[in-house]
Structures are given as structure tokens and as C-alpha cells.
Image (cartoon, rainbow, N blue to C red; front, side):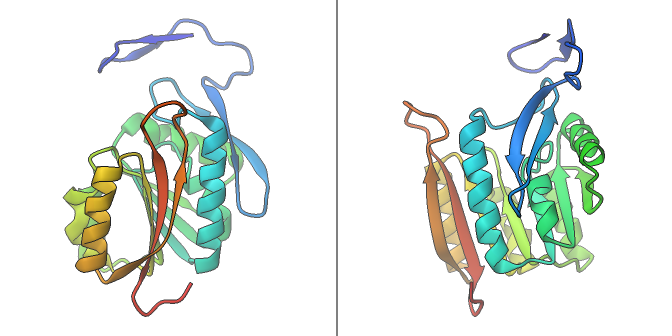
Length: 219
């Protein structure tokens, strides 16, 4: 049982059930069909609908499997919802997250599950991506799961990265349309697939997954 202020402030644990691992369990399915559970600590972001989250991961792993990426960059990684689901299908995942508690939660999940090919980076997505581009780092696949504001702040370094493919998870159609427009018109990507998901039933909110592939690449 945890209490926290509605906006900001620390989350205080009042009581912990035996065997709870200090958080709620979030089921995920990884490539190959294996079912796992992540521990989500109090105050750390996670998707609100566990069943639709499983559908989201199924779509992402299916599409990513057709790309066969050797390296994945997961921006806005949270506590590892997507990074850890993708880890089994690639040589290495770099997970970038600005919330230090989410990073610590992700590292704990990696250790708990015995996942050794995910590197956690604490910092803002735009700044860390710019540094990676400056160092000449390359990734086959980039996963974007930004807040409602989208990825305008990192569009420059994202285009400079020249990844083979991008998987964009969005909860805001207007900023998604804006960002897809830039990626197609300025980045030379083509929109290969788009899948809506009813993450928030009986509301006007909509989750979606988009697959963008660099021109000249075949999926």
C-alpha cells in the first residue's frame, strides 16, 4: 500500500505484502512466446491496461522479428516494459530513461530475470541520443514510446542516426501525425504499418504502433 501526492513528491510505502517484490507484477510476453513478469515499483510509469499491453508487446515483437535487428535503442524506456521484451531477439538493447527510479527499477528487473544484454542509460532522450550520434553509434532499430508531446525535441539527432527502422508507440494521434510527417518527408522513411490499440476503453484516447522503414530497406 503506497501513498503519494497527485503531482510530484515522493511515494511512501505504508505496508508491503510478503512476496510482493516491492511493487505490482506486470505480465509480458517475449519473443519465442515465453511469459515473464516485471515488477513495477510505486511511482514508476507503466501502461494502465495489462491485457492491451500484452497485445502491444506482441505487435512490437512480431514486427521487430521481421527486421531481425542486431542492436536496438529504446528511448523513453521506463522500467523495461519493451526493452526486456525485446532483449531475447537481439544482441544488445540500449535503454534510455530520464526517471532515475525507473532506471533503478529496470536494472532490478534485468537482474531478476537474468537479462544481461540490456544497458541502462539515465538521462533525457534528446540529450543522450545527440551524444550517441556524436560518438558515431549505430542501431538497427529504434523504439520510441514518448509522452503525449511526441518526439519533436529529438527529431534532429533521430534523423541523423539513420536507423534501419523505427517502431513508434504513441498515445496522442495529433503529435504522432506531426512526427510521422517529419520522418517521412525529411528522414526518408516510409510508413510500413500502423496498428491502433484500445488501451483506454470507453474514452477518446487511442494508443497506436507505427513501423517506419528507411527507404531502400525491405521488411
